[in-house]
Length: 262
Image (tube, rainbow, N blue to C red; front, side, top):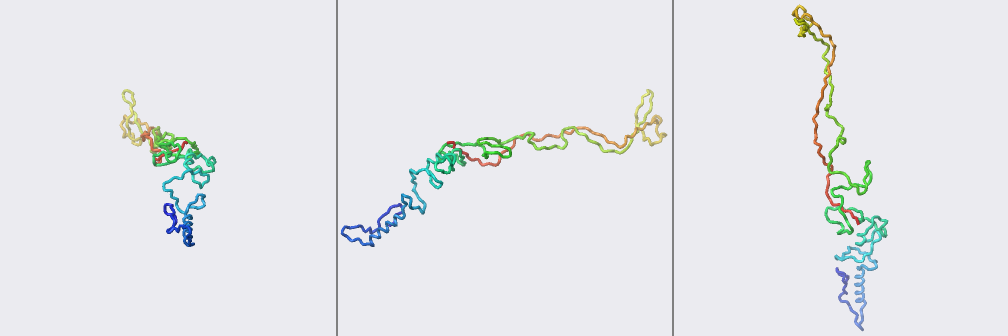
């Protein structure tokens, strides 16, 4: 019979054991050999000739004394994971340094130091901050390790959009509409003290005979023609706003950033 599910081989029954001075029939002998051959064909040999064609279950056992991998398709051992260098060229055998080398950042929602399962020394970084790429954009340069930005900000006058309030608090000049050409009349008379009072008068077009004697000396004001009058003054516009800081953050999800330092 072939190997059982635990990897054990048992001779077929009957096993046709060899007995001294007893003829062994070829059919019996070949039955045992065929059974052994079938069992060996299902084995994984030490020299790597046979390739597994199914999952390789280690039954919770370790692969021990595994040499460091040297090719992209090789397995790596725990020591390699803990001591990977920072560039492909520096890694012995050209193993790609993509498994969290020194300087790598690990992002997780759990507060567990990656050193407990990845090895190496890790430090939590960027608490309360987002990450930004190193380099220059729109005239702003970001160096590695630099920090900046603020959670909230109060605008200065220079940061406000240019605007007005339709009148402002400064003085202004306004002009009245023209009323057309016209004139005004005043009357002059004399009293006993020689004072010349100014009193109301009828229109100049009225007959002097109709005006009382004390008002018959009438002087007409010279016409100024059609004209306007200038009015000066100021308007006070009430101020608005309290200068409070406003939110300066994008919508966010808080996670843990860990950086490998050794």
